[in-house]
Image (cartoon, rainbow, N blue to C red; front, top):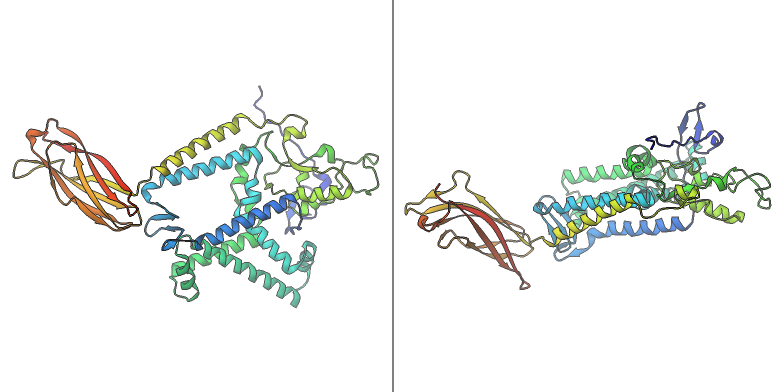
Length: 476
């Protein structure tokens, strides 16, 4: 079995007329500004509807109330995350690790199956780029008008159009920035303090920082983020195989390409179905030519499919000259949906999802930590009793002020030195120093396993009991 990987050599010499490139030398191309042409079609409609859902979720979620606070807020100062009725503390951050692993393997699974659909349909960079392009089109016109406007001298028309466009971009960027910060700062307080100039310098810094990041990424950098800065584009090839569905051009059907009349039979002219209109290039947000084969710059948005299908329909040809397909399918071979790599990613994803649900269900509304005296394992009291000193930390993870009862087990006879009923406010930690004493004659071992128990009753009548094991040391 050979270890060599097949290399495909693509002849691009006949595509030097691609409109978004300027030839500098025989083998060197200088990328110019990409003027994205708008297109209608099934994949464009799916992306737009999905983008609306995601945008509305992002912008409206901080405004949803839950009790006396907003439903979702990540309170970094108090070190707790509120997600509706769930409160996640630093002690529960194993959930975050599990969630990140679920996201990673979910991305691997989807990429192995259907390529970079995350990039094309749900990536924030793509969503905001299309929003900014939509604003650009409404203000400056279609792609050809935008191109002519950029080539014109600085007239009053050009200045006010450019100014209006960038002003709208900045407003969208500012709202995006404030919405993002509203997940960490109470939303009403944030907006009131920001616009009344009463916010802290830190709030203004991060607001302006994220505003200009959004403005720069979606307004100016756009495809540069996808081509040169996004790591996902670089390692996606490790997940692709010949059975991965991705946007591809059927060269066997399309070549040789060239213009022709609708009334002419392309086979009589020695041509394929591709009329070389370059619409697939003009609608591509990263400015590539899908006819050059699989490229890491392709984000699988399906815009070129919509453009090509529209042309094929007008020409009276069969659609899907460009489509979501596999390399095996293009070669006339069978596509294997179920395969080892896909099963492996799916299995790990299922396991991590089960682990996440387990830890999520195991979250207790209170937490008990036991800290032993570090200076000595035990001490002998004036009455000759063996005394172990503990510090109990009781964390109230609910949003109710609660009374807690503490108890101890593991010794037949003992004396509790300290209070055994405490009151802990919602979200606070109560530190209780105390000790347990026992007669050495009743202790049969040098080291005894003991248990502290904390019990509380919630307002809904539910009882919460947490037990924590520790050690009781006798004379050595």
